[in-house]
Structure formats: C-alpha cells, structure tokens
Length: 89
Image (tube, rainbow, N blue to C red; front, side):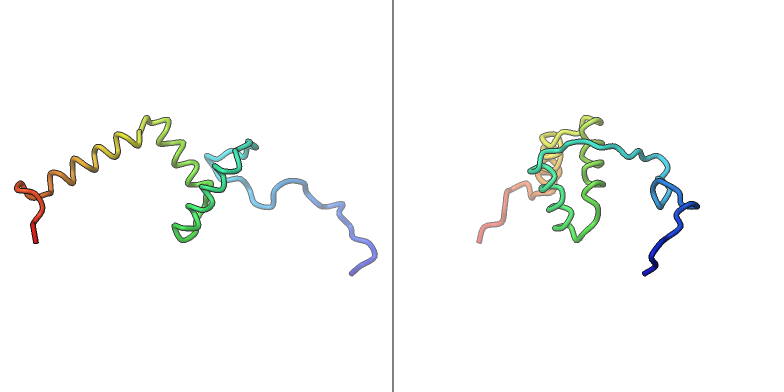
C-alpha cells in the first residue's frame, strides 16, 4: 500500500449510472414484509426482491385483487372439469 493516494481527480456519486425510468429512494418497510419478499425471491431460485416488490405495487395500483385472481382460476378449473364430477375409483 502507498502512504498517500491522490483523489484530486476523483468523482463523487454512484459508480454505475442509474437505470433509465428508475428512481433511487429511501423508504422504511417493516422487517417482516421485507423478509417475506427476500425469502420469496430466494425460493424462486434467486432474482431481485426489489423487482418482486415493484410487481406487487403494480398489481395493487392496477386494482388486481387476489380474490379476483382466485375466482378466475377456479372458474377456469371448473370449466375444464368433467361434467359428471371426478372419476371414482
């Protein structure tokens, strides 16, 4: 190591330029919520928990409700089911 370093030509700020269309902010999120998103990202094989939070917020502002999703899935499954019910064994 050197005894002294010259930082006179140094620049402040992030090393990489920010991604277009994204804004860096600081928010406070409850620990349990953040843990859930981190765990979910890990269980999905990696990826970004921040991307998952973004997706959840997008669904919320678009008015996508989990209850509506569940109803839609059930309707689709019931349509595919045989008319006389499940096969007996």
